[in-house]
Image (tube, rainbow, N blue to C red; front, side, top):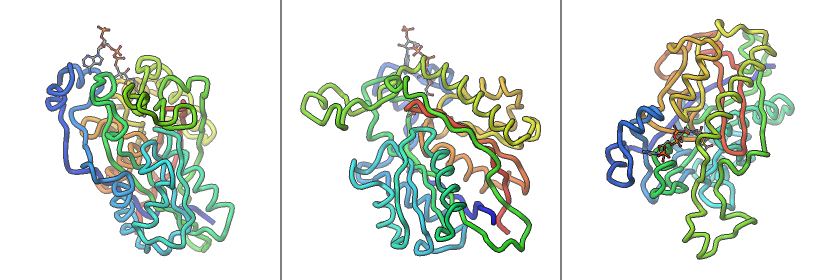
Length: 335
Ligand code: ACO
């Protein structure tokens, strides 16, 4: 029995918001944003486009590549911090739009590490139960809906998008083993939960006129503190994952770090002694898309034909929670 990646898909809305556009909205400039973050532009969804709509487009592309129908899906997982509504789950909204009536649906809230958590859960469910054959795993965000467009310390960072994977359980045992999952390390540091949060809208601060006036429904972040913890956390998770797998860093064909800040990405590559040409980066085009980020990268690499059979790909992420993780996968192109 092996779990395989049958397809990937991604979607970003067409409207790009450049650093120059942001210069007209808050006290900032293109040079500061590019040198401090590596971001040149980000995509912003229209008012009536929901997180589940972004997820839908990415999902359709992944299903198309996988060659399966929505009705074949047994599981749908959506990782997001910007759900369509607090209730129901965005995965149920996606199920409705896809017409995937046979799937069990659940959301995962682990911020920028959300896709890694989702893959880990779906992989374990597929391995544990024969009744599950196909899982759709999506990371989708409309971060523009939880961004404070008057706060220059955060609004320059975030963008909208979605990335998806179709995982499948293969019981045939006749073909060459194409198991994708090699090793992982997930972790959380709840003691730092206040460093990155949306303070209102939950049981602690239900929505009131005051919470709205105080901008408490938007992302707040202590950027510098998160920065330091992000670098050390991801490097440690990557090292532990490679060690568990018995794979040396030089055997890794690609590392896909969560796209939060170019300086964080460079610092990770540096500490792991990985050459920059093996470090995937698309942050300049999309900014930080939280749960969607790793899925966007994986699909771009896959569709560009840059992933070869047997390639080790190291995924790593860090985000609100604080959550963190690394996952080593082995790539096989769909024949
Ligand atoms: N334009 C111009 N100046 C700015 C801007 C801006 N947009 N934002 C802040 N500044 C100023 C500050 O006011 C400060 O000025 P001062 O020195 O006069 O006080 C100066 O620039 C430096 O500010 P810092 O906050 O120290 O800037 P830093 O180099 O740390 O960069 C950033 C900030 C980009 C947010 C960085 O800290 C970062 O990327 N942090 C990590 C983010 C992250 O990884 N988040 C996790 C995932 S997100 C999620 O889970 C949803």
